[in-house]
Length: 288
Image (cartoon, rainbow, N blue to C red):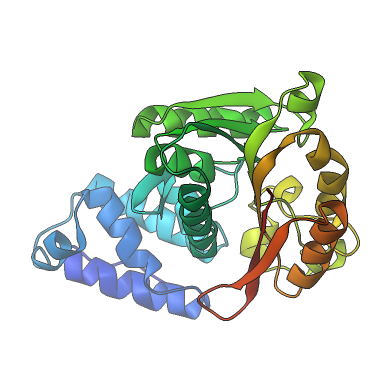
C-alpha cells in the first residue's frame, strides 16, 4: 500500500488500514505515532491537523511495516508499561504482562500482612526485564530485593530499569536459587514467574511471541511444570521458617503447583488465586 499522507490524522488512518490488512492490532499505529511524536494520547488528538516531518514519517512507515511483519510493538518502541511505570524491553526479555501485575499485587498484600514494616529479604527468580523485582523494591521499601536470572543479557535490561526507576535491587546471575544455595543464604520471600508453557504449545504460539520473545523464558518442559519441580528441590534450602512463596502459573497448572507446594511444605497455607480473566494464574504459599 502506497503511504500517501502528510498530516497526523492521515498517518493514523493509513496505519490503521495497513495493520488491519495484515491482521494486526490497528491500535499499534497510534502507539507508534505517539512514540515518534513524543506525545500523550490527548496531545496526539489535539494535533490531528499538524504536518508530519518527512524523516519522522519514513521511520513511522518502517515501524508500522515491522509490526505488520510480526515484531511486537513493545520491542519497536523499546518499552512497556507495568504497574504504572515504564520499563525498557528488548528481545532478550519477555514483555511484561498485565496478569503479572496481579502477582505483584498479591505479593505486596501478603508481605505487608506477614512482615508489617519489618525488614525482610525477597528474591525474584528469572527476573527478565526486572519488572517484578523493581516494582516490589519500589512498593515495599522495607524489602531487601535481589533479582536472579540465568542470562546476562536479561540482567543488563533489568539493571537499566532499576537504575532508570531509582529502585534499590541487587542482581545475581545464576540458575534458579543456586546463587543463594551456594552461599547458604536464607530469605523470607521467593517470587517467580518462570517459563511454564509446555514445549509442544511453544511450537503453536503466535509467531509474534514465538519468533521474537526469548524461548528460554517461555518453555517449561513437556508439561510446562519442569521449573516448579526444580523449585520444590531448592526452596527448602533457601526459604526461612516464616516465609512466603509466590508463583505465576499457566492457566490450568495451579492445582498441580499447589499440590507440589503442599507436599514440600505440609504446614504451609497454600492458595490458588484467579486473575481478572477468571484463569488460575497465581499460587501463594505462606509458611510459619
